[in-house]
Each structure stands twice: as structure tokens, then as C-alpha cells.
Image (cartoon, rainbow, N blue to C red; front, side):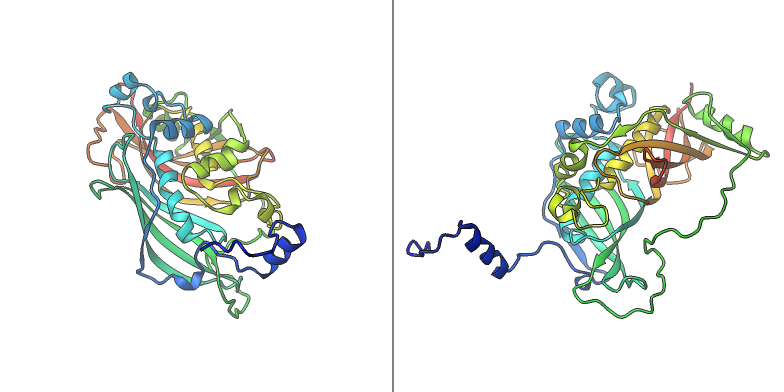
Length: 370
């Protein structure tokens, strides 16, 4: 019922400030104490994966593989139509989980075991997301935080079939701090101490081409020598508003770190920071532009090393770890790998100051020349 007799002018600036001082805040997000191992959380929002959203993500992150844009290129790869890009699927799976899992803030410590459970996801698929708490533990160095690991799965809402899954670990604020001994807990993000002198191989080799054989031959050339197959990619992408706030909000990622400048003014970064999956996708887009990528298989050991903010430029660096005609991780059902081989990469995203901001390993099928 409306109280039309209230004489208070709620829009008078002094009155309104007094009201704000007295009003409770309806908080968003979840404190560490609310998570218990084995809990399963069904995240309420879910995205209907659209071609427009998919193409916006790919365009902004420089992922320009024609397979995901053109019908003829998609048909050559065995798809019925241009499918949803794997980076967009990952971001759209993680986005809806943020409100329940990590909106309270805290460092994103890492993600691993990213696996695609089906060969193709097409526009029009309605996505539903759920997470299970795998582990909770104290932070030995930060009494205001705990550490939580979840396994998150994106599913086809119509069938319930898993499309993508991964494990991620975050520091999460506690409602009540605990006493600690001040020691370090494995997985805490801390400032780097004195670094040892770098020990690099004498020679860094670059593959002669973009096919599987080129990566395999380069590894053979490095074998038995003080050499590694490692190279940088020429392109960079400067962070603008479309990347900073537009892409995370379009994936239902509500974390204030990406769009609330007033709140972030008092944070360590001093301003909004880029959604990690945007940074990652840019770096991988740079790498894929120098490959004949056939299918993405999985990612492990992903870490975010430093803040990325508006005006920073993200570049990519790649090290080739191994190449095999037979993949060492599961290939989604329906994938014909006859004309491709598996290559495992380590990718590093870095900024204009040559500071690493992301790293992770990636396994992909790369086309052979035949």
C-alpha cells in the first residue's frame, strides 16, 4: 500500500543522504561460510545462445576463424551450420554462476579441467548451469577470506546433456574473519618476491607453418638441443568499454569488478578490471590466427597473474609442449580426427609492459596438410 500522506521529501539531498545512512543494504553474493563440500547449486539465470551474441564475442576478441562465421567453412569442418565458439560457450557458462559463487569478490585463483562434452553447440541452445562445491579451506595468509573450489557444468536445458565442465578456485570473503598463523596457504595469490635469474633455452624456434606437421617438425628440431618451440603473436587488442563491461554483462556476469567504477575506486586496481575470460579469449584468438585449428579439446592450469584495465593492450605468446597423432585427452563424441593431430600448448597473455596477465595449457586438434 502506498503512503500518500508521508510529508518527507525523499529526494531532498540532505534527507536522502540521511536515509542512505540508516537504510540496510540488500546484499548480493555469498560469503565463504555458506559453502559446504558436496553442496549443489543450480544457477537461476541462463543464456539462450544466439548467433548475435556469439559473433559479438568473436569479433571483439579477434577470434575470426571462418568456421564460426560462414556456412561453407562450417560445412567443410563437418558442422551443420556455424556453431557456437568454444570461448563464448565457456564465458556464457561461467557468467551465470558468478552471482551465486563469487560476486562477493576475492581473487580468481585458477581454473582447470575445462572439457567440451559434445562436438557442436548451435545457436538457439538454451543453457542452464549448475555447480558443486568440491572443496573449502582456510586461507593461511588472509583471515578475511576462505578458498572454495567448485565444479561447474553448462547443460542443454532441453535435454540436460552436459556441454562443458570445469573446476575453478576463488578466494571468497568471510562474514567473520578467523585467526591465522600468518603462513601461506597453497593457492593464495600473493605478491611476488625476489625472482631468480631467468634460465631460458639458447634457442627459441618458430614453426614454419600452421599445420600439425609444422608443430611436430619444430618439436623434433628442438629435441636433443637446448631449444624450445616458443614465439609471440603480432596482434594486440587494446581494452575498451565493449570489452571491459559489455562482454561480461552480455554473459550475465554480474561481478561489480567489471562495471562498478565507484566501488572499484577503493580496490587494489583502483578501477574496473577486465573479465578474465575476455583476456584469455583475446590471447587465444591471437594464437589461433597462427594455427589451422580443427577442434578445441580442453584447457588446464589456467591462472590470472595481474589486473587488466581500460587502456591496457593484450598480446599473446605461445610455447608448444608436445604433438601427437593420438590425443591424450578425451575427444568429444562425433569428432572425426582423421585429418588432424593433437597439439598441447602453453599460452601466456601479456600487456604493453610485457607483464604476464594470464597463462594456461590448451590441447587442440590441428589440421594436417592432407
